Length: 189
Picture 1 (tube, rainbow, N blue to C red):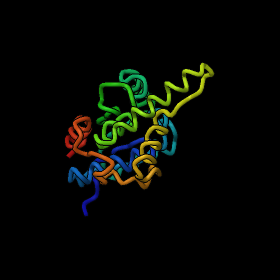
Picture 2 (tube, rainbow, N blue to C red):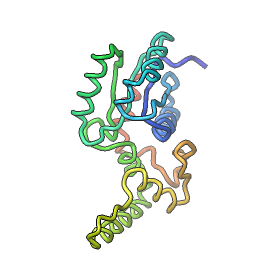
Picture 3 (cartoon, rainbow, N blue to C red):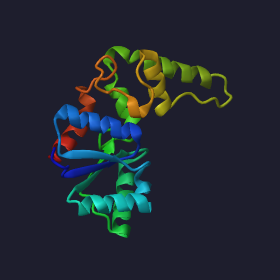
Picture 4 (cartoon, rainbow, N blue to C red):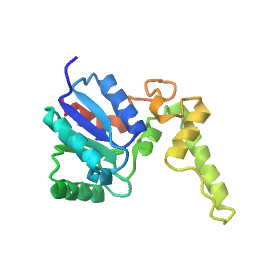
């Protein structure tokens, strides 16, 4: 097997598992996902910087696939500042869920859930509305909690590092919401 020509740095275990699975499904063998343990600010950590620099020394080009959180523009600006301050060479970046809208991996995963199971998320929305009705500041599941609840409901693996995204009873890797990420990863070949 040839060594990767690209390393894509992602936030956590679920991100790595998902991006690695997508690379396999797309037949992209020259790209490898590497986890940094958190968002764009983690690029400041010495261990992460060293990992990036080692990848470059080994001949890899570097890209990131990170959560946009509340704002793609804010995350982009933060990345550019970090790159400039620390002299990091990151050639490409993609912001989950679609490089345009705010969100995260879990936002994307909701869109990748098999269409026949989308009702699980409607039930979760109703649950949150019910909790809000008490006026006591109760919190319903968000982000990871929604995905864990989905996995529990459909009998899928909840542990991020062991989730089987190729299981087409739970996940639809042909979903149109994946097109921007598929195009980004395909452009790294």
